[in-house]
Length: 144
Image (cartoon, rainbow, N blue to C red; front, side, top):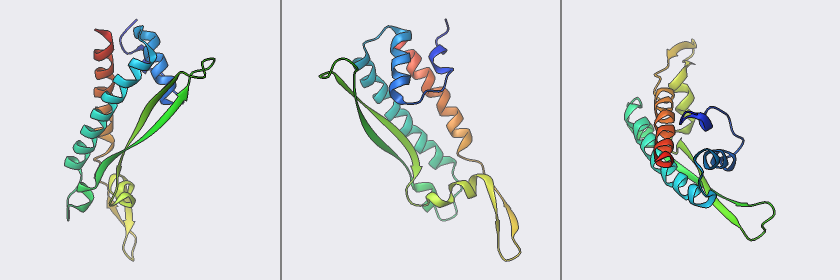
């Protein structure tokens, strides 16, 4: 079984993903959630910084707007009313110019004549790169 096995599927929630990683690496669920949160926060911050650096810069406002948002979830383990775990989902987004992300990434029509303005892909390549980094960090943290 390769170290990427739990990562080859789509999970409905972070909890399902965490349980799969815990089962694959033989970890205690609560300890593993804390470690995953730490890895996820670090990777999300680095991804926001990388998108900021790759973003097109006209005035700089769009590029400087990239940040992360963490939403904390509490999950109760079935059958054990007192045992709960908390985990955080992180979203990387542009807080100042969110409405420009798809226009700059994919291109758009502009002006009275609706001429085409080509996109400047800067998000997708960073997301792909950091997905691989994230998977490698998780595998490295839990395999050893």
